[in-house]
Length: 443
Image 1 (cartoon, rainbow, N blue to C red):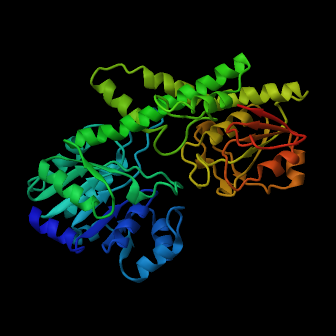
Image 2 (cartoon, rainbow, N blue to C red):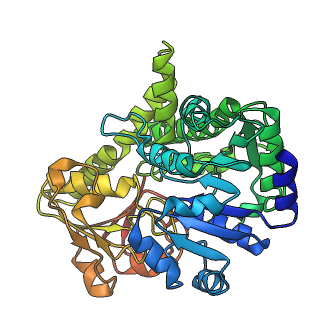
């Protein structure tokens, strides 16, 4: 069976089914199509499927013409129906893995995808889980489900974990250049998994098992989370000491060894960095290990929006204005620059907390024209609904304070500063502004 599937992959005859048409699944589908494979993409969101069929891309890394061409040529079949799996040779799970309100793993999307696959599992078939999760998920959740169908792993079907590493909006590191990790339940699983990804990725690295592959992703993101927390705390410390943290970082960057740069900001956002460490913490609690470093990092990072609100209040007080009833414009609400994703964005917490302090809050973001009540993390603010206001001279001059939360490339920072009274820059985006009347306070 291994040989048959290997040959189908070699000849580009293997049909790929990707479950989850989001920031990971859609670019992955296009990558396989570019190499000559036919792809099914399954998503329970009917709106996403309709947009793909119409050639409308909702992912910055996928061009509309790519979708339109793939659909018209019959290389991409978008659907909500898991029945297409009966004709697929490969199933790749790229669904979200959020956390609950108690910061515990929510595997409901993985379970739904796994059940869909199990109904149509056949020999030979390769299943790859890419969604970030705790070590043991592939072996403890997916494997027993698939084995219950009477098929033998490593012989009739093949099961691997291969963590996604897509960085939305990153032009320097396209999917094909990001090294892929693959860990299988058996050696045959790892071998065929590597062979599949070698069709679209320049470098594929096998690891000894699925648990190791699962841990690789959590290790990467926990490392980033902790170091971002350190940068955030040093920003607070440097302000107390009267030191410019940004100058400190630029100085530290000159060291050619032993230092990797991380930057402070209004918090941590996205679908990975603020979420994945909780999968590791939850797993560690299960095995009786009281992890402290990630807990401290979480306290610092999640506390940054509150720190920014306090800093904004101090800045306004110095200008003779109370935070209450002050007009505040948030520039940028997405979790990172030049993308439309707002998942876990610290700007949303910032807006909520400013409103709780009775500030009059506006926002401008060309990537996110509207914020619905469901976009905000706190149930206390379920009635918040905002629209991005136009960015013009009149708007800027009416504001008591402008807070830069997301440093989009399209912002004209010199022009913004020329038309503002007071700016709180959480990203050092105004560093090159000259001869402005605005008072610019850096994090």
